[in-house]
Image (cartoon, rainbow, N blue to C red; front, side):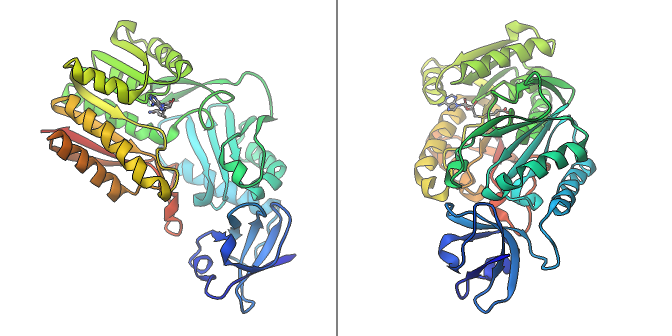
Length: 393
Ligand code: SAH
Protein backbone atom coordinates (compact mmCIF):
# COMPACT_ATOMS: atom_id res chain seq x y z
CA UNK A 1 0.00 0.00 0.00
CA UNK A 2 1.39 3.40 -0.98
CA UNK A 3 1.65 6.07 1.69
CA UNK A 4 1.04 9.80 1.48
CA UNK A 5 2.71 11.90 4.15
CA UNK A 6 1.31 15.30 5.06
CA UNK A 7 3.25 18.42 5.99
CA UNK A 8 3.52 19.39 9.61
CA UNK A 9 0.25 20.74 11.01
CA UNK A 10 -1.74 19.60 7.96
CA UNK A 11 -3.18 16.56 9.73
CA UNK A 12 -5.74 18.70 11.55
CA UNK A 13 -8.60 18.44 9.09
CA UNK A 14 -8.39 14.65 8.77
CA UNK A 15 -8.21 14.38 12.57
CA UNK A 16 -11.53 16.24 12.63
CA UNK A 17 -12.88 13.70 10.13
CA UNK A 18 -13.07 16.17 7.31
CA UNK A 19 -12.49 14.06 4.19
CA UNK A 20 -10.36 16.32 1.96
CA UNK A 21 -6.62 16.98 1.73
CA UNK A 22 -5.49 19.68 -0.67
CA UNK A 23 -2.42 19.41 -2.89
CA UNK A 24 -0.46 21.95 -0.85
CA UNK A 25 -0.80 19.92 2.36
CA UNK A 26 1.10 16.94 1.01
CA UNK A 27 4.78 16.49 1.77
CA UNK A 28 5.52 13.27 -0.07
CA UNK A 29 3.98 10.28 -1.79
CA UNK A 30 2.21 9.53 -5.05
CA UNK A 31 -0.19 6.96 -6.43
CA UNK A 32 -2.28 6.17 -9.49
CA UNK A 33 -5.68 7.79 -10.11
CA UNK A 34 -8.16 6.49 -7.56
CA UNK A 35 -5.69 4.15 -5.91
CA UNK A 36 -6.21 3.58 -2.20
CA UNK A 37 -3.45 5.15 -0.11
CA UNK A 38 -2.54 5.27 3.55
CA UNK A 39 -2.42 8.88 4.71
CA UNK A 40 0.10 9.67 7.43
CA UNK A 41 0.93 12.70 9.56
CA UNK A 42 4.46 14.12 9.31
CA UNK A 43 5.47 11.95 12.26
CA UNK A 44 4.12 8.79 10.65
CA UNK A 45 0.80 8.44 12.48
CA UNK A 46 -2.08 6.81 10.56
CA UNK A 47 -4.78 9.33 9.64
CA UNK A 48 -6.98 7.79 6.97
CA UNK A 49 -7.45 5.42 4.07
CA UNK A 50 -8.09 7.53 1.04
CA UNK A 51 -8.38 7.70 -2.73
CA UNK A 52 -5.55 9.52 -4.49
CA UNK A 53 -6.33 11.89 -7.34
CA UNK A 54 -3.13 13.04 -9.12
CA UNK A 55 -4.62 15.91 -11.11
CA UNK A 56 -7.10 17.35 -8.61
CA UNK A 57 -6.51 20.21 -6.18
CA UNK A 58 -8.28 17.92 -3.72
CA UNK A 59 -5.48 15.39 -3.97
CA UNK A 60 -6.81 12.97 -1.39
CA UNK A 61 -10.38 12.06 -0.40
CA UNK A 62 -10.74 9.94 2.70
CA UNK A 63 -12.71 6.69 2.60
CA UNK A 64 -12.19 5.79 6.25
CA UNK A 65 -10.53 7.04 9.42
CA UNK A 66 -10.42 3.56 10.91
CA UNK A 67 -7.04 1.87 10.47
CA UNK A 68 -8.60 -1.59 10.86
CA UNK A 69 -10.96 -1.05 7.93
CA UNK A 70 -10.07 -2.48 4.49
CA UNK A 71 -11.16 -0.57 1.40
CA UNK A 72 -12.69 -3.38 -0.60
CA UNK A 73 -16.09 -4.50 -1.93
CA UNK A 74 -17.40 -5.19 1.56
CA UNK A 75 -16.44 -1.65 2.64
CA UNK A 76 -18.51 -0.21 -0.22
CA UNK A 77 -21.35 -2.58 0.54
CA UNK A 78 -21.50 -1.33 4.14
CA UNK A 79 -21.41 2.33 3.12
CA UNK A 80 -24.09 1.89 0.46
CA UNK A 81 -26.30 -0.12 2.83
CA UNK A 82 -25.92 2.58 5.52
CA UNK A 83 -26.89 5.33 3.08
CA UNK A 84 -29.90 3.43 1.75
CA UNK A 85 -31.01 2.55 5.31
CA UNK A 86 -30.97 6.24 6.32
CA UNK A 87 -33.37 7.08 3.48
CA UNK A 88 -35.62 4.25 4.63
CA UNK A 89 -35.90 5.94 8.02
CA UNK A 90 -36.84 9.34 6.59
CA UNK A 91 -40.48 9.71 5.66
CA UNK A 92 -39.98 10.60 2.00
CA UNK A 93 -43.24 11.00 0.12
CA UNK A 94 -41.79 10.11 -3.27
CA UNK A 95 -40.15 7.33 -5.24
CA UNK A 96 -37.59 9.89 -6.40
CA UNK A 97 -34.92 9.80 -3.66
CA UNK A 98 -31.27 10.74 -3.35
CA UNK A 99 -29.72 7.52 -2.06
CA UNK A 100 -26.10 8.60 -1.92
CA UNK A 101 -24.99 12.17 -1.35
CA UNK A 102 -21.20 11.99 -1.72
CA UNK A 103 -19.10 13.03 1.27
CA UNK A 104 -22.12 13.10 3.61
CA UNK A 105 -22.55 9.36 3.06
CA UNK A 106 -18.85 8.59 3.38
CA UNK A 107 -18.53 8.09 -0.37
CA UNK A 108 -16.75 11.21 -1.67
CA UNK A 109 -17.61 11.99 -5.26
CA UNK A 110 -20.52 9.56 -5.59
CA UNK A 111 -24.06 10.77 -6.24
CA UNK A 112 -26.88 8.27 -6.71
CA UNK A 113 -30.52 9.16 -7.22
CA UNK A 114 -33.34 6.66 -7.44
CA UNK A 115 -36.14 7.47 -9.87
CA UNK A 116 -38.76 4.72 -9.50
CA UNK A 117 -37.27 1.66 -11.25
CA UNK A 118 -34.10 3.44 -12.34
CA UNK A 119 -30.93 4.56 -10.60
CA UNK A 120 -28.99 7.52 -12.00
CA UNK A 121 -25.43 8.07 -10.77
CA UNK A 122 -22.54 10.48 -11.04
CA UNK A 123 -18.99 9.24 -10.42
CA UNK A 124 -17.22 12.54 -9.84
CA UNK A 125 -13.87 11.57 -8.28
CA UNK A 126 -10.93 9.41 -9.29
CA UNK A 127 -11.70 7.08 -6.38
CA UNK A 128 -15.31 6.42 -7.38
CA UNK A 129 -14.24 6.03 -11.02
CA UNK A 130 -11.78 3.31 -10.04
CA UNK A 131 -14.39 1.40 -7.99
CA UNK A 132 -17.21 1.98 -10.47
CA UNK A 133 -17.82 -1.66 -11.39
CA UNK A 134 -17.94 -2.82 -7.79
CA UNK A 135 -20.18 0.11 -6.81
CA UNK A 136 -22.54 -0.50 -9.75
CA UNK A 137 -23.06 -4.16 -8.78
CA UNK A 138 -23.60 -3.24 -5.14
CA UNK A 139 -26.10 -0.49 -5.95
CA UNK A 140 -28.27 -2.88 -7.91
CA UNK A 141 -27.92 -5.60 -5.27
CA UNK A 142 -28.60 -3.35 -2.26
CA UNK A 143 -31.54 -1.43 -3.70
CA UNK A 144 -33.12 -4.18 -5.80
CA UNK A 145 -33.49 -1.55 -8.55
CA UNK A 146 -32.42 -3.27 -11.77
CA UNK A 147 -31.32 -0.36 -13.95
CA UNK A 148 -28.44 2.05 -13.43
CA UNK A 149 -27.68 4.93 -15.74
CA UNK A 150 -24.39 6.83 -15.55
CA UNK A 151 -24.44 10.64 -15.76
CA UNK A 152 -20.77 11.36 -15.23
CA UNK A 153 -20.95 14.42 -17.46
CA UNK A 154 -20.57 17.09 -14.78
CA UNK A 155 -17.86 19.73 -15.23
CA UNK A 156 -16.21 18.72 -11.94
CA UNK A 157 -14.93 15.51 -13.60
CA UNK A 158 -12.47 17.67 -15.55
CA UNK A 159 -10.88 18.86 -12.30
CA UNK A 160 -10.26 15.19 -11.50
CA UNK A 161 -8.70 14.56 -14.92
CA UNK A 162 -11.64 12.38 -15.94
CA UNK A 163 -13.53 12.60 -19.22
CA UNK A 164 -17.31 12.74 -19.42
CA UNK A 165 -19.13 9.39 -19.56
CA UNK A 166 -22.81 8.60 -19.92
CA UNK A 167 -24.87 5.50 -20.63
CA UNK A 168 -26.37 2.42 -19.04
CA UNK A 169 -24.07 0.74 -16.51
CA UNK A 170 -26.59 -1.97 -15.60
CA UNK A 171 -29.86 -2.79 -17.36
CA UNK A 172 -31.09 -0.88 -20.41
CA UNK A 173 -34.18 0.48 -22.13
CA UNK A 174 -36.11 3.73 -22.12
CA UNK A 175 -34.38 6.59 -20.31
CA UNK A 176 -37.71 8.36 -19.65
CA UNK A 177 -39.01 7.75 -16.13
CA UNK A 178 -42.07 8.89 -14.17
CA UNK A 179 -41.88 9.48 -10.43
CA UNK A 180 -44.64 10.22 -7.97
CA UNK A 181 -43.80 13.12 -5.62
CA UNK A 182 -46.40 14.09 -2.98
CA UNK A 183 -48.95 12.38 -5.17
CA UNK A 184 -47.97 14.42 -8.25
CA UNK A 185 -46.62 12.69 -11.32
CA UNK A 186 -43.39 14.07 -12.65
CA UNK A 187 -41.51 12.83 -15.68
CA UNK A 188 -37.81 13.09 -16.39
CA UNK A 189 -35.19 11.61 -18.63
CA UNK A 190 -32.08 10.27 -16.93
CA UNK A 191 -30.10 10.71 -20.17
CA UNK A 192 -31.24 14.26 -21.01
CA UNK A 193 -32.29 15.92 -17.74
CA UNK A 194 -30.14 18.26 -15.67
CA UNK A 195 -27.74 16.62 -13.18
CA UNK A 196 -29.02 13.03 -12.78
CA UNK A 197 -32.37 13.98 -14.31
CA UNK A 198 -34.24 16.09 -11.76
CA UNK A 199 -33.89 18.42 -8.76
CA UNK A 200 -34.87 16.18 -5.89
CA UNK A 201 -33.37 18.57 -3.33
CA UNK A 202 -36.37 20.90 -3.70
CA UNK A 203 -38.95 18.16 -3.05
CA UNK A 204 -40.01 19.30 0.43
CA UNK A 205 -39.96 22.96 -0.57
CA UNK A 206 -42.30 22.22 -3.47
CA UNK A 207 -44.75 20.68 -0.98
CA UNK A 208 -44.46 23.59 1.43
CA UNK A 209 -45.04 25.96 -1.47
CA UNK A 210 -48.26 24.12 -2.44
CA UNK A 211 -49.44 24.40 1.17
CA UNK A 212 -48.62 28.13 1.40
CA UNK A 213 -50.30 28.90 -1.94
CA UNK A 214 -53.42 27.24 -0.56
CA UNK A 215 -53.30 28.79 2.93
CA UNK A 216 -52.57 32.28 1.65
CA UNK A 217 -54.95 32.01 -1.26
CA UNK A 218 -52.35 32.97 -3.89
CA UNK A 219 -54.05 33.26 -7.28
CA UNK A 220 -51.25 34.42 -9.59
CA UNK A 221 -47.85 32.71 -9.43
CA UNK A 222 -44.58 33.37 -11.23
CA UNK A 223 -42.16 30.43 -11.17
CA UNK A 224 -38.74 31.74 -12.21
CA UNK A 225 -36.05 29.26 -13.33
CA UNK A 226 -38.82 26.70 -13.43
CA UNK A 227 -36.92 23.86 -15.14
CA UNK A 228 -39.67 21.27 -15.76
CA UNK A 229 -42.21 23.09 -13.62
CA UNK A 230 -42.05 21.30 -10.27
CA UNK A 231 -43.00 24.45 -8.35
CA UNK A 232 -45.65 25.22 -11.01
CA UNK A 233 -47.37 21.87 -10.44
CA UNK A 234 -47.17 22.61 -6.71
CA UNK A 235 -48.81 26.02 -7.22
CA UNK A 236 -51.63 24.51 -9.31
CA UNK A 237 -52.11 21.81 -6.69
CA UNK A 238 -52.38 24.61 -4.10
CA UNK A 239 -55.17 26.19 -6.10
CA UNK A 240 -53.42 28.97 -8.03
CA UNK A 241 -55.50 30.24 -10.95
CA UNK A 242 -52.70 31.49 -13.20
CA UNK A 243 -49.14 30.14 -13.14
CA UNK A 244 -46.28 31.30 -15.35
CA UNK A 245 -43.11 29.18 -15.69
CA UNK A 246 -40.02 30.98 -16.96
CA UNK A 247 -36.92 29.13 -18.08
CA UNK A 248 -34.28 29.49 -20.79
CA UNK A 249 -34.61 25.82 -21.75
CA UNK A 250 -37.36 25.10 -24.28
CA UNK A 251 -37.10 21.36 -23.59
CA UNK A 252 -37.63 21.91 -19.87
CA UNK A 253 -40.68 24.11 -20.56
CA UNK A 254 -42.20 21.55 -22.91
CA UNK A 255 -42.02 19.10 -20.03
CA UNK A 256 -43.53 21.70 -17.67
CA UNK A 257 -46.54 22.00 -20.03
CA UNK A 258 -46.79 18.21 -20.16
CA UNK A 259 -46.71 18.06 -16.33
CA UNK A 260 -49.70 20.37 -16.11
CA UNK A 261 -51.76 18.00 -18.28
CA UNK A 262 -50.38 14.82 -16.72
CA UNK A 263 -51.56 16.02 -13.31
CA UNK A 264 -55.03 16.82 -14.57
CA UNK A 265 -54.87 20.63 -14.46
CA UNK A 266 -56.50 22.73 -17.13
CA UNK A 267 -53.80 23.90 -19.57
CA UNK A 268 -55.34 27.40 -19.59
CA UNK A 269 -54.11 27.88 -16.00
CA UNK A 270 -50.45 27.60 -17.04
CA UNK A 271 -48.17 29.52 -19.35
CA UNK A 272 -44.57 28.72 -20.31
CA UNK A 273 -42.18 31.51 -21.15
CA UNK A 274 -38.87 30.69 -22.86
CA UNK A 275 -36.95 33.77 -21.74
CA UNK A 276 -34.27 35.24 -19.53
CA UNK A 277 -35.61 35.72 -16.01
CA UNK A 278 -33.92 39.03 -15.27
CA UNK A 279 -35.13 40.65 -18.52
CA UNK A 280 -38.65 39.27 -18.01
CA UNK A 281 -38.91 40.57 -14.45
CA UNK A 282 -37.88 44.03 -15.69
CA UNK A 283 -40.46 43.91 -18.46
CA UNK A 284 -43.22 42.79 -16.08
CA UNK A 285 -42.34 45.69 -13.79
CA UNK A 286 -42.56 48.14 -16.69
CA UNK A 287 -45.92 46.67 -17.64
CA UNK A 288 -47.16 47.21 -14.09
CA UNK A 289 -47.90 43.54 -13.45
CA UNK A 290 -47.93 41.92 -10.04
CA UNK A 291 -48.08 38.38 -8.63
CA UNK A 292 -49.35 36.83 -5.41
CA UNK A 293 -46.40 34.43 -5.23
CA UNK A 294 -42.98 34.29 -6.88
CA UNK A 295 -40.37 31.52 -6.83
CA UNK A 296 -36.72 32.33 -7.58
CA UNK A 297 -34.65 29.16 -7.92
CA UNK A 298 -31.72 30.17 -10.11
CA UNK A 299 -28.76 28.01 -11.16
CA UNK A 300 -25.54 28.21 -9.18
CA UNK A 301 -24.34 31.82 -9.60
CA UNK A 302 -21.31 31.21 -7.33
CA UNK A 303 -19.78 27.73 -7.63
CA UNK A 304 -17.04 28.74 -5.14
CA UNK A 305 -16.46 31.56 -2.67
CA UNK A 306 -14.27 33.37 -5.24
CA UNK A 307 -17.37 34.07 -7.35
CA UNK A 308 -19.32 35.35 -4.35
CA UNK A 309 -19.12 39.07 -5.08
CA UNK A 310 -20.39 38.95 -8.65
CA UNK A 311 -22.97 36.37 -7.72
CA UNK A 312 -24.18 38.54 -4.83
CA UNK A 313 -25.01 41.33 -7.25
CA UNK A 314 -26.91 38.92 -9.52
CA UNK A 315 -28.91 37.50 -6.59
CA UNK A 316 -29.64 40.97 -5.26
CA UNK A 317 -30.89 42.15 -8.62
CA UNK A 318 -33.43 39.38 -9.19
CA UNK A 319 -34.60 39.55 -5.58
CA UNK A 320 -35.08 43.31 -5.81
CA UNK A 321 -37.18 42.90 -8.96
CA UNK A 322 -39.21 40.05 -7.47
CA UNK A 323 -39.93 41.94 -4.23
CA UNK A 324 -41.21 44.87 -6.28
CA UNK A 325 -43.37 42.65 -8.50
CA UNK A 326 -44.98 40.95 -5.53
CA UNK A 327 -48.46 42.09 -4.53
CA UNK A 328 -48.75 43.38 -0.93
CA UNK A 329 -49.02 40.35 1.34
CA UNK A 330 -47.51 38.19 -1.43
CA UNK A 331 -45.14 35.27 -0.92
CA UNK A 332 -41.56 35.08 -2.20
CA UNK A 333 -39.63 31.82 -2.15
CA UNK A 334 -36.04 32.71 -2.92
CA UNK A 335 -33.14 30.25 -3.17
CA UNK A 336 -29.42 30.00 -3.72
CA UNK A 337 -27.76 26.66 -4.45
CA UNK A 338 -24.29 28.25 -4.53
CA UNK A 339 -21.82 26.58 -2.19
CA UNK A 340 -19.91 29.88 -2.22
CA UNK A 341 -22.79 31.83 -0.61
CA UNK A 342 -23.62 30.89 2.98
CA UNK A 343 -27.08 31.20 4.52
CA UNK A 344 -26.12 34.33 6.46
CA UNK A 345 -24.69 36.07 3.40
CA UNK A 346 -27.76 35.11 1.38
CA UNK A 347 -30.02 36.69 3.99
CA UNK A 348 -27.90 39.86 3.80
CA UNK A 349 -28.16 39.93 0.01
CA UNK A 350 -31.94 39.63 0.17
CA UNK A 351 -32.00 42.33 2.89
CA UNK A 352 -30.09 44.60 0.49
CA UNK A 353 -32.58 43.79 -2.25
CA UNK A 354 -35.41 44.76 0.11
CA UNK A 355 -33.71 48.07 0.91
CA UNK A 356 -33.33 48.90 -2.78
CA UNK A 357 -36.90 47.84 -3.54
CA UNK A 358 -38.15 49.75 -0.48
CA UNK A 359 -39.96 46.61 0.57
CA UNK A 360 -39.93 44.84 3.92
CA UNK A 361 -41.25 41.41 4.65
CA UNK A 362 -41.69 38.72 7.28
CA UNK A 363 -39.39 35.75 7.12
CA UNK A 364 -41.87 32.90 7.61
CA UNK A 365 -39.37 30.07 7.06
CA UNK A 366 -35.77 29.26 6.28
CA UNK A 367 -35.53 26.55 3.68
CA UNK A 368 -32.90 23.94 2.85
CA UNK A 369 -32.37 20.80 0.82
CA UNK A 370 -34.56 17.79 1.61
CA UNK A 371 -33.03 15.46 4.25
CA UNK A 372 -32.04 12.79 1.73
CA UNK A 373 -29.38 15.39 0.75
CA UNK A 374 -27.88 15.46 4.26
CA UNK A 375 -25.10 17.59 5.67
CA UNK A 376 -22.82 16.01 8.27
CA UNK A 377 -21.24 17.61 11.28
CA UNK A 378 -17.73 16.98 9.96
CA UNK A 379 -18.37 18.34 6.46
CA UNK A 380 -20.20 21.66 6.59
CA UNK A 381 -19.08 22.38 2.99
CA UNK A 382 -21.74 19.89 1.95
CA UNK A 383 -24.43 22.46 2.72
CA UNK A 384 -25.35 24.25 -0.48
CA UNK A 385 -29.07 24.93 -0.90
CA UNK A 386 -30.56 27.68 1.21
CA UNK A 387 -33.77 29.60 0.82
CA UNK A 388 -36.07 32.11 2.46
CA UNK A 389 -39.84 32.22 2.47
CA UNK A 390 -40.89 35.86 2.77
CA UNK A 391 -44.28 37.49 3.13
CA UNK A 392 -44.26 40.99 1.72
CA UNK A 393 -45.59 43.66 4.10
N1 SAH B 1 -36.88 24.98 -9.61
C1 SAH B 1 -36.49 23.87 -10.45
C2 SAH B 1 -35.00 23.76 -10.66
C3 SAH B 1 -34.34 25.01 -11.24
S1 SAH B 1 -32.76 24.73 -11.91
C4 SAH B 1 -37.12 22.58 -9.88
O1 SAH B 1 -37.71 22.62 -8.80
O2 SAH B 1 -37.01 21.54 -10.53
C5 SAH B 1 -32.37 26.23 -12.68
C6 SAH B 1 -33.02 26.46 -14.04
O3 SAH B 1 -32.67 27.77 -14.46
C7 SAH B 1 -32.61 25.55 -15.18
O4 SAH B 1 -33.73 24.88 -15.68
C8 SAH B 1 -32.03 26.49 -16.26
O5 SAH B 1 -32.42 26.10 -17.58
C9 SAH B 1 -32.64 27.81 -15.89
N2 SAH B 1 -31.91 29.03 -16.26
C10 SAH B 1 -30.59 29.30 -16.14
N3 SAH B 1 -30.31 30.58 -16.46
C11 SAH B 1 -31.50 31.16 -16.79
C12 SAH B 1 -31.88 32.49 -17.19
N4 SAH B 1 -30.97 33.47 -17.29
N5 SAH B 1 -33.19 32.73 -17.41
C13 SAH B 1 -34.11 31.74 -17.31
N6 SAH B 1 -33.80 30.48 -16.92
C14 SAH B 1 -32.52 30.19 -16.67
